[in-house]
Image (cartoon, rainbow, N blue to C red):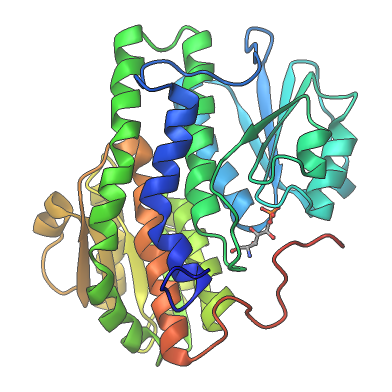
Length: 363
Ligand code: M6R
């Protein structure tokens, strides 16, 4: 059932162009020009969105915050479910509550949802398992259609969560009158092009495998990203520590000088995710601060970024150019592959990492 792959995780990483394509077609119809959500979400009375999840699903929410705030102009709060449920935050009228969960059974996320029932105006869930508790207890469940995810490390569920959340952000922006039909059409065209770009990212596999053999020798790794690449830095660190047991931390690039730069030395690789976008120069200057202190930098960027980054980086991985908005979906793939190949090089149990369960149904 691994379809010729050594691990479920490898298979699930490789499936991403196909499953994201299917998920987008499901919500966009064959022509791909209209967002068709399974139930009406009326954003007219919505004044804020609160998003709650755990682990990788939480990081999908954090990415979506950048999209929703930028596109729809709605304020978005994002919480990890275990904090949200016991903090018992006020839920003002006009709140749309969104819960994201691959399994749909995560105990803390479900408890957070139950806290919002009767308080939030509407409860929407983004789930992979359509008949799960979280889906059943929501007013509206949006399936991500990633297919069964077996590997404990979430991969295809993450990119499909991002796909569905991107559509939610675009639909909110449309209803809020912040997107012209032409602008919406441009965004949808860009989104539909993402699975093709995924294939180009997967083609970097051999290079990533070679880099991973080097990563397998270190004990600490830092990931940096700015803007919507910041959640991706967190995801990169989570994925690496989860399956390779290497200590990894993700930071917003701008936070570097507020502490983590003290860790920089030649044995601590720093993985910088920086597409050539409006924040590129800022991130490059953080990267130079790392290099000036002898830190080996692995830069993940696009062709323009690689050309402008200057010399001194340890290695560069060049991804296809992607629209700024949706670049985080694409940058997820090299991050997953790095974690995967590092774990394989270390000989860990990739699909069943120690101490972890696929579905966390106890708090
Ligand atoms: O099933 P869920 O999406 O609710 O699970 C949430 C987390 O337990 C999950 O994303 C976990 O962090 C993954 N193992 C990360 O790869």
